Length: 342
Image 1 (cartoon, helix red, strand yellow):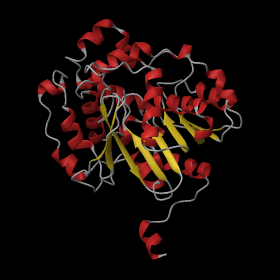
Image 2: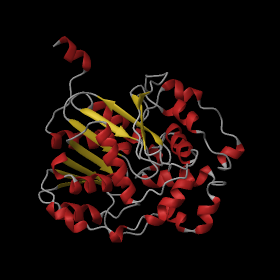
Image 3: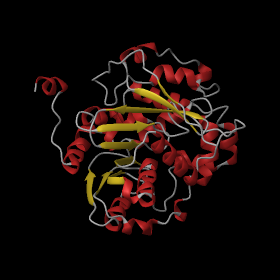
């Protein structure tokens, strides 16, 4: 039986760094201690409480769903936009985009299990759940029902794109608009950094030993220009991947990622405004898939970003925001102070 227990958690630091492409609370950044050798080698894991202390934001909230305290941020007012991140990422990937759009919309973004602050879902016995597509379907349905979301625009990246368009297929009346950013869905070979977990040896050893150098290499691989990644962002990805229970959960999840079994023909039945955004230097999902989505979804518009990689909204948020505003039918939102004076 699913239990739902909404709880708010305010981060002790609400100011954010404007210099980073994906800002974090200043005090959280300052509080990050040097990592021990055992931590850098992935011999130890980062406790969930520690991740919560370091990476919650001023708008962070938690809700108990399917055995996990699900971390999400709910900000702004107006029409609802739900943002769903990709594999091994977190809601922080939307920071800059959400910070701008929240002046005109209600923005809801979450840490999908088993990633980010949320971590793995667990059964009634405490066992880690396998995050296959049916489990994600049950999870996202429960999450949105718990928040009372009956209609929204969905913006999804990578795995989050798959979850978004699948939700639109299953709940056609509940999705107003759809934005797919380097979305998963069509048959493909898994990126090498994910495909490693199809090895039984890697699945068995990774919870006890996985050097952070491998994780950093994977993060650099999703950027079109790896020089854009700052040390704080790299550290966040590493610590989330080394989070308590995450590697074991990924080991159970990856063998279920068989996109060849997905019915993408149902995309032709989607009758809603759709925007497909893609990084031309995406090394994880073939750029040809952008055309596949645009061709199958009636009336879909597509934008290809030269020089950007798999997560363009994090790598170059200002470029993505330009296209999102045009698609959503809004101009640059006024500053909060200007609204107050008006």
